[in-house]
Amino acid sequence: MDLSIDLCGIKLPNPTILASGVLGVSRCSLARVASCGAGAVTTKSISLEPRSGHDNPCVVTYEAGMLNAMGYPNPGAEAAREEFAAVDQLPVPVIASAVGTEPEEFAAVAEILTALPFAATEIPVSCPHTPGFGLMGGHASTDAIRRITSLVRDKTKLPLFVKLPAGGPEVVDLAKAARDGGADGITAVNTIGPGMVINIEAARPVLGFKKGGVSGPALRPVAVRCVYDIYEAVDLPIIGVGGITTGRDAIEMMMAGARAVGIGSAVYYRGMDVFSEVCREIRTWMEDHGYESLTEIVGAAHQ
Amino acid sequence: MNPLEPRRALVREKIQENRETYSLTLSLADHDHFSYRPGQFNMLGLPGMGEAPFSFSSLHLERGRFTHTIREAGSLTRSICQLAAGDILSIRGPYGNEWPLEKAKGRHLIIVGGGIGIAPLRPVIRHALGNGEEYGRLYFLLGARTEDDLLFREEFEKLTAGRDGTLLMTVDRGEKKELSHIREGLVTALLDEIDVDPEESITFTCGPELMMRFVARQLIQMGQDPYDIFVSMERRMKCGIAHCGHCQIGAMYVCKDGPIFPYGDIKRFADTML
Image (tube, rainbow over all chains, first blue to last red; front, side):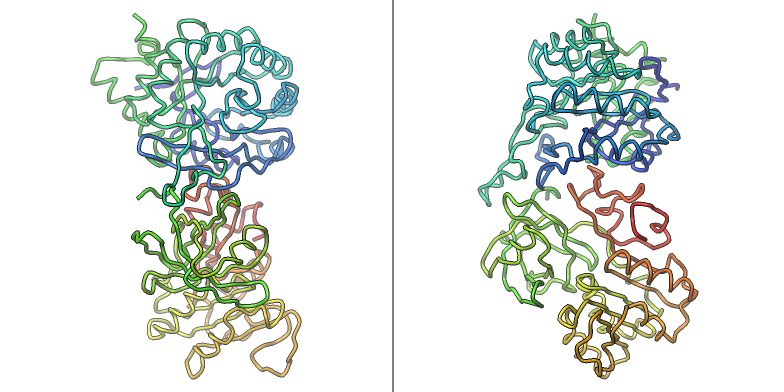
């Protein structure tokens, strides 16, 4: 069964996308994930200057999900220019994640990355655990999102996705602000929180940054609802991200309105082959339930 | 058990190996299950100071205890080296793969270590000397800046005395040049002493990447297969379980695909000095 999709003119062999932040530091690493069946891959977020990120531990799991506080470690936009120069040699489209503290930094990074053979740009305005960025940088208001998106829009010719935070009803307004700023699509959602896990024997928070964004199964129903609300409010393609671990999860997210699904934490739960596994499960489910095309599934829950 | 959740380790014993290197013998503080294989590593950390990977320098658990040998190189390692018996640190692991001791059986074993890189080879040296009948000739070629930096020198001298293993050492700056088995110069010069067929040998090496590069290149020139040379790599690590991708070399992750790689798999990547 054909699972290929069109995302703002980008052809994906299937709707599974490696979410930003996981295994996305280098071209070779992205190629390995592509070989495991991902329909597209997203780089680790790239900032203008190199960043070392937060102290370890940066990741911990608990019974319902995962927390991470990486703090955007990355070698910076100049190093990215070299690392990703031949990124179009990968068998699947590569999405560049560009991040900044000031709106102008987002735009400067996006301008550098747009000269590289990426398929699209994604700008996260929603990280919950890095000072100066996302929720800790005041990026997640309608005004900030509109301004950041429009500045980036001026600097990139690539399809532009804005990665939103999970939120209450206001997530709809954030999506509209991204659209008004010139976004071509919405990525929803980032990790939620931040949350905290305490090692009670040591009587200290486990993570080096103490707090971290919550992902994995605990996030999924929140992400599905955000995608559902955004789908009704904004006529842009949506990449649904948040706790997708199985083919059933992916179908649920697409029925909420996502055209493609981001997978991150599930690489921990199921290994790198999670992409081909999820695709196999999607196909089997569609065959068992009489669906012939993903277009019948996207938004199907809105009746 | 959650492989990402740090546990508490208790410092049982600390031995100063030289002016900047300490061996810390640890056990889990909370009676958790623990086992490991030589070549693997733990992430050791202190609250607010982060974590770093450290290979085991002990061969196997003894009464639940294991040892890491740590050189003071930065603020975290300095603080860990200042701990005393009874102190607590955080531990995640063990992570990574092991030295391929099975593959080495029935062959000559060449071990080449440099500086602090001698520490992860110590369990292999101890294992090989304790199971000499399983291997052909044993060569232990160790190099360091000074005699003081030759980790476990007395231990290895005692262990090899009267045995088949050949222990040869070099230092960059010699103090007692008359000592026949400690020479001035590079560890690669010791490879000339090997009088077994490299094609029937297997090599384990750990040390500065530049050293491992010259060791591997010379062994290949001598006829050894690049896939019979195993190097132990080190990178800054975040997660330790091949989730974040920060310790990648090419498409491989040092934390999970390594830290031990066949030289043949790793030599072509620009992000190493190999």
